[in-house]
Image 1 (cartoon, helix red, strand yellow):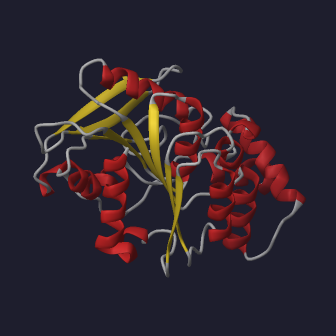
Image 2 (cartoon, rainbow, N blue to C red; image 1 turned 90 degrees about the horizontal axis):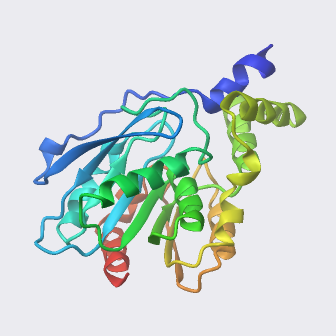
Length: 274
């Protein structure tokens, strides 16, 4: 009963968090809430942050991790706005203020993001479009880079190689033992519950199709997604314009804090060069 009914929902059900997120009022930026309807009828929410300069250097789409929400990126949106980059922060389906019952790890989310781009581009000047994702958001960003030619560069932080591996790793970390084939069964059930196909959402495979510039980032002390996965994904990226940044001592959630101002400057330099 546990492996058939309950465990799959641990993978695909909506995640909530008690974490306190910043508000647009905390920053000297102009924001606008944007809603779209997904292809399967869900109301999805995003937030557009204007550039603080008169010129547009390009637009960055921010994609949060599992259990996160768009407001997580407000501090970074403010920082890049000072350099002429507006941004679009999204609540993925089943997160934040967006509707949805199941997380599908990019299967439906990539179409949602493409629809957001189409909607926003119809009314705003975007210039070159890039994507910046963390953890699950990084995995989805790699999928977007391989699918949507409108996205011209990417910053990827702390993500995994394959759906199977990350679920096996999380199960072992959560319960302290490996369930082997039982975890494989849970993965199969999760696909059925969420109505998605895992073979189409593996970031490592998507990397082989990516020809855009990529700044790939991983903490060396990541306790959730091992840095070895970051190195594998980086190696698989087909683009010759790529750079691997290993943030010494950073775990899964504090790359920005440990990297500090030098990391911020590295990211801004990358954005300006594209």
